[in-house]
Amino acid sequence: MKKIAVVGTGYVGLVTGTCFAETGNQVICVDIDTKKVERMRNGEVPIYEPHLDVLFERNIKANRLRFTTDLQEGIKDAEIIFLALPTPPGEDGSADLSYILGVSEQIGKLITDYKVIVDKSTVPVGTAEKVHATIAQNATCDFDVVSNPEFLREGFAVDDFMKPDRVVIGTQSDRAKKVMGELYQPFVRQGNPILFMDEKSAELTKYAANSFLATKITFMNEIANFCELVGADVDKVRIGIGSDDRIGKRFLFPGIGYGGSCFPKDVQALVKSGKEENFEFQILTAVMKVNEEQKTVLFPKMQNFFRGNLSGKKIAVWGLAFKPDTDDIREAPSLYMIKELLKAGASVTAYDPEAMPNVKQLLGESIQFATNEYEALHDADALLICTEWSVFRNPDFDQVGAVMRDKVIFDGRNLFDMETMNKHGFYYQSIGRGI
Ligand code: UGA
Image 1 (cartoon, rainbow, N blue to C red):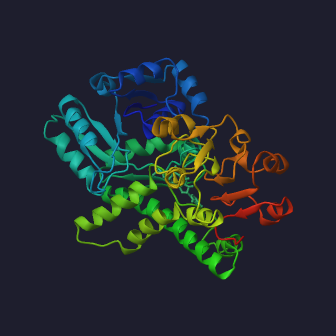
Image 2: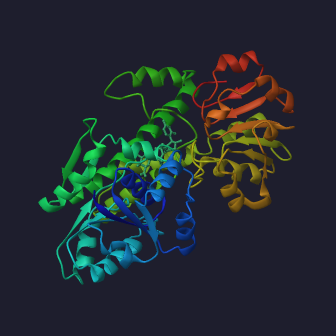
Image 3: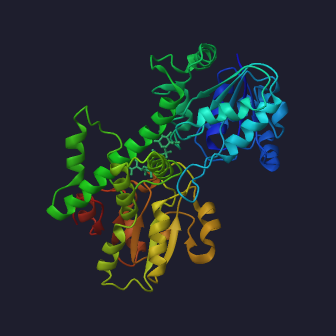
């Protein structure tokens, strides 16, 4: 059992704190947001993440998971302090470290015995060094700073945390290595490795992993766009190349671009870090450009279909979140498409199982929201699919066709096979598969 403080109860902090409590540690989460802390003390999980609620409740009840707004109280007894603070992109795309360094400064003033301070947030190479220097300005005791990036996917965060493919720990201190190794032992029992490395390599591993995955998706999106020109089927090509172990089947699904709070921000931040060293990430620069274009790749197709006149057309949108199983709409392709549709004079009625409140906050009355996927289709001239929620995968096509004004589907996530669409008499355009 270890005593742990987690500073910052955003997505990463909350999952980290809860999962460490679940493995028997004493965890105290610190956040400056008084209202949020109050809600969490009452057992309310402030984010939507499958399976988190059960663990959250169980560990609060067992008194292994507590919350405070007081940093001093939070870190007093902790041997390990996780920093899970936001690193939003600054205006120039570089990660803003002011939260992390601000808390580091306070930690330096507060600690009185040995602590391991862990960067859990995604931070540019060299941040551990900066955090160390900031704490050292005031600290009067020994401490180590470790880089321990997280590889959680939204929607699968609990599972990813509990059964990681690997745990990356960046530190050159034997003392910190021992503490972190003991902490993570219960999570790597399946034989997956804890990879010890230096701080900078750990920091870069995180950016390189996300950038590689973003590149893999983007590559497939370009292949899909080319498939359409030459009459090939991207699904066949995807399986054809993915069967090669060296390429792998995962993250090869074409669509209307990657979004979320991680890939866009991390690719941009890595490119920016390169610039600071007079180094140009040529591939990643192209990835960013292609992905921007991919978000609206269906729009010209819709325009073509309606002969350049979308004005007054009623478009149903299925899916608003940047991907299924989350309410997160950051950099969601749906928002880019909706913006184009509204600009062209179309009206939009959307349905998403979780993300509607967030979109409502952002777009207000400019679009309508439906209470289920069929209601969104009423009198629609076309359906646009932006997120592959499971509930959209196997609809009653007779009902879909009956409630729509016209049987037209633009599918940004390739949910349906062409044969089914033909059989049911739909005009169906997807990504990389012809019409
Ligand atoms: C991503 C990484 O997968 C995690 O490993 C990482 O820890 C996390 O970022 C982070 O840095 O915190 P996440 O952003 O939650 O996780 O979502 P993903 O499941 O990776 O999806 C990202 C985007 O790629 C989504 O927009 C998704 O629709 C898109 N995508 C994914 C595709 O277009 N095609 C695919 O084949 C896979």
